[in-house]
Length: 225
Image (cartoon, rainbow, N blue to C red; front, side):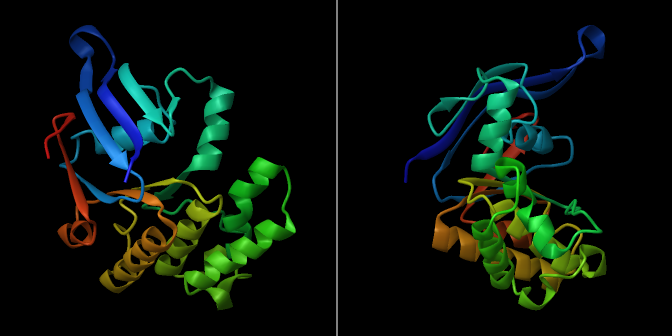
């Protein structure tokens, strides 16, 4: 495997002077192409801040971040938006679906934003992804009518819609029962194995972490293991 991304010496400080809060303190991390890694650490350790920076949604105070050979800290907002839409997918604990849209419409959203419209090819991929998620019979259901586990599977399909190299998942099973959590993780592992998508999954659940092939432990703003 070769490196997909690398961050070095990441510092993130909120505020200044006596009111400064130091969240990341020189964090360094590399992820290889095709990795499936668990991101571990206590609340307040810097995990969410790291994911937000890796997703190009926040700039660090200092440090470096390269992905696919690009210096993402030197890129402008428009370039970052385009890069994020093409190369990075997101799965959140609270799925963030549009409740009045169907499962398919939610999954198509990232491509519609990129292309400015829905295409026949996108609709075909969206249907295929939902079928792989076990939702072939729920494609045209409004997501408000789906169960929590079904909604999270829609969110995984949406994250994969643009075939990103990296998917960042922030507690993707934290709001699910055990059976639904295991189903979502099985689908993530399947996509990782079949498509080589790199996953970084933040979790407090040791069982979920055990399903990943690598553990990345963050403590006091640095990677310690």
